[in-house]
Length: 325
Image (tube, rainbow, N blue to C red; front, side):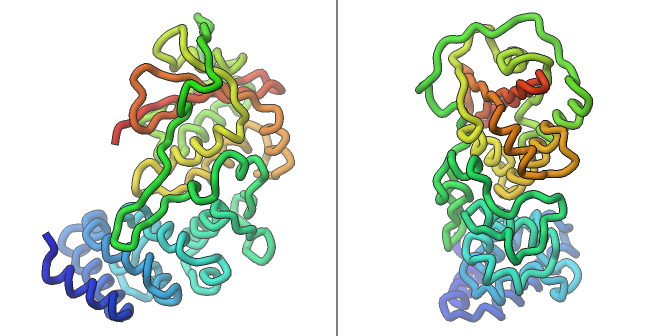
């Protein structure tokens, strides 16, 4: 049911009265925080926040996140409607437009990495990432998907379109494989536990996906999570697995694809045994990595079944999960 207040806010938007809409957002969010708490307030005001982030001039839209709004009135990185409000904003304007305007560091970082996913090269002129994650896509990051599919496509009135998380997406290139038996989990080489934890923390992967580590090849790791010994599976380049691993962090509305990119780089750095995300070590790891994927008989709308093997260390990790939304 469209209320009188909904019609009033839409009329303000049509007339370009964005300052009044921002004031309404701030007042409504602050009042809701007092009455119902932060989480409820963020949810109640998210549709208006989406409208402002999507359609307002960037000079005003960035003020959703400005602390000058007062206590309870400021959108945080977790405020979301169809997706995070900062991701909506990042899909609408270039980094050149947004960089001089954005204040809070957490929002700046996520917006920057969203723009990187959308093809912008921020390696010159932008402040370095605090963890050293590159501010431009490596060739293997860009190879496996179209630019238009890397981030949700947001709609002006609310809602979004996004590519399904499906790995594998079909039986093409796969065949029947008998997985090994009698394998045990291991922390692998020194740091293995850190790597497994980094994979498990890929945003929204938990709790619907499991992560295991074994000493051996990728099918050994897959055997711990697959539902049967005989599966339809096969190997694929890491570049084709990369999009699904990034999207895994953005299955829920509260997370964006920037979370997935940052989390995956964290995991790759740990796999490479590097102290920081130097692209040389990670690129070398990606070049030698072997990726095994397999089908499950009852895959949900979103599903991810992949094992990553580093032949240099003799260790493999598997990530597997399925979810209906």
